[in-house]
Image (tube, rainbow, N blue to C red; front, side):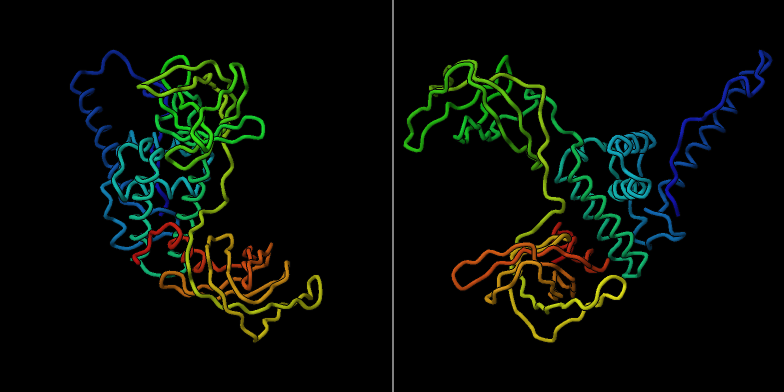
Length: 368
């Protein structure tokens, strides 16, 4: 059942043909009736499922306490600002409703809170069964979570908003140095004076232009250009002052979240016969064994002893969490270290069930 969204009443006062003969008693009754209708719609809205399909996700899905009307409006405004589609917007409402979120902006800008809401929604859906409809809803949930992770909602727009103790990587010519931000308050950024590996201070001339990279607590990377405006001291430490900037660039991230691991896997070489519509994929019976070093729904890295050619295709079988996963992948590149080879694979074909299993493992939502 689709999620109801309450909209402002689009009517004109003149549509009611109001005149001065309306009594105070009639006005009070009208207001009471309108309030009752709004309350009824709010209760009805809190009982509906996450995405369309005509059925609720099971008894567990009704555990949320519901959102206030103000929170619903605010959440849908956030969804519009992020360019979320209809299905993602309904799922976002479901996720927040299941954890009775009343401050959407705080949750959207706090990764730990956001993961808590999504983990609860995932487990409610997971307990509802493993039907194709449930699998589709879980896939929508993870697709939304991934979209939010790569969004810039709540991103800082000025260096005055950067938190103290953020680590800056400053680039001056060919030199890169890591320094701590001491304070973003005041007319300039106050950072530790850079030092060499031997501990002596690096004197960068005033007016020198620098490029700065940093990551915030949401693990989102940013870059900006600045210049050295002076030197001073704080608490007995030498410090450098950098000019503020209102032009921060968001650094691109991986398309999908990836998790380091050590999962045994079996690979079967896949041969391609024919071309065009007559192309056939034939799975060779010979096995290659390896260990998955990392995994995402986009691909994985596998350590193995056998040499492998770039471009080769494999059927990969492994157990992720407590689920059997199978995927068709292609080798993008290889790294040879001594007797071992690490192959980097892009998944070409992955079932929805396998994709959900990998995502629940990567985001650590499943009970392990």
